[in-house]
Length: 160
Image (cartoon, rainbow, N blue to C red; front, top):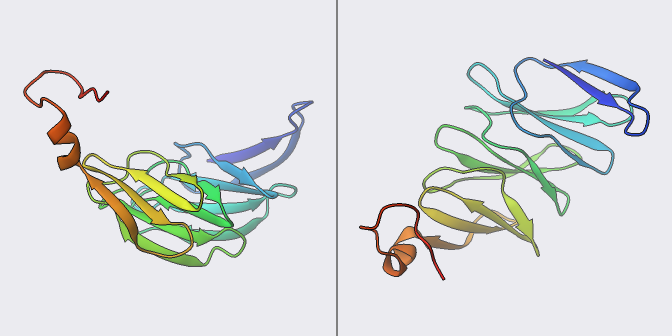
């Protein structure tokens, strides 16, 4: 896989970088760094590339494959992994892993961040974590949704 950065105004190629694996999800860009999630044959990687030169600033290796795009907020990069679907937090500048936690039911898509809270949706729960430290702020399990929905009806549950 080759990552290419082009000038937004002219389309001129600024740099190319060869990465082992495939890019299946969108990259994220923040403060001059391009965060590229790479889907490997068995293990995923997250590359932090200098947006000016394409040089690798840091790389994170995962036990399983990447699941979704990275999210950058509050000086952190949040990335979910396939398999048991843990969610990771990395320092955006250094790549140091700050925390890792399993998501009940697996991560579905990129996490969202608002007001210092990281939100992750799974098949069974909406989980929320402090963006700065590891640990659940709260988990709203599917049981709460079940009590508000008629599960015998066909189709998706509609909450009003």
